[in-house]
Length: 407
Image (cartoon, rainbow, N blue to C red; front, side, top):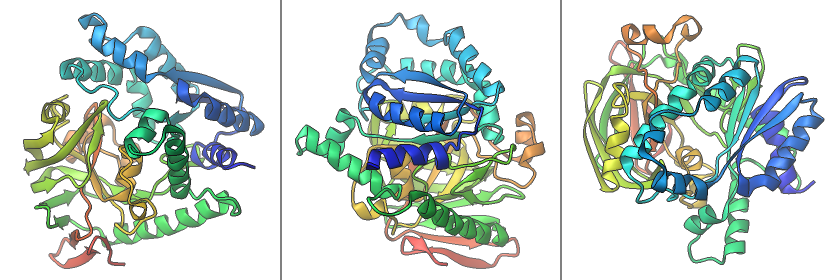
């Protein structure tokens, strides 16, 4: 079995964990058709009812943003809503192959991007609600495309850059010539679950972040929060790894409880543009100042997408000493870069609290939980990051020392 075959099989079995008789919606760039076919093959081998393809293309997307009539960005076509609603409601599983040119939309009108994002999120509202409630199986993973490989390895010939990116991805998801990838993932999930339990048992009131970039941030955690990571159990009882790779444990912050300044440690690929060397100042949970050396306007617009976009929705912990960080590669892809570094997200909260299953979105505000149509992870972890947990009785416990978990 080739490495690509091992990877595709793992995404179907461990990632989205498609069940016998279940429909799989497989989203992929046209450039990744060969790998998508492998995923479809293994889905059918597991007894999948049907594989439904959802194709995308960077070139056509850029042409649309540059030349389409302005009003098309204000309302998504009805077929998109019908597509996502129908498959979400019937209990389909969703596998997303996320791969695009990090600068595919460079120079595009930021307002067009903002309006398109709003209309697209509205069309996917049912899917997002079911996703956040763990009522449907989903997984996001990546495979190389030429423009992305060229960005990661700009001095390398095209074919060689593609092979290097494939190899880099394989290392992050435990794909090699000899080992059983399923066993490796199960071992990894057990370790991640154990660390999440330790953090949940501490029941910290605050996390205090500091590093040499200038980050000095205090984040209050949600009442009755819990930590999760690795794989998640759906309401159906099926487990799936929603991100591959995944080295994080994460939880939900309290909406109005974050104060201080935070600096990015890696560039952020956002809506087809790269945001570099940026910072946020946060007061009582709200982002009140945004600075960036590159594409500040796009980042600022993202934090103003709706009322909840300027508040935090996630805090995630990953040791600096990790299989992704240790490669020394900037992937220009949030799926990988967020798993190389501690990160936080502005926008929609991840519902990591003990009674999340019984809390409706309209109750979030009263609970101090953020609600938004966006969720953007950005990386803040560094080699010298310190994170201190503060208990409800004021006791301070080291969580991170010199960029890594203290336990």
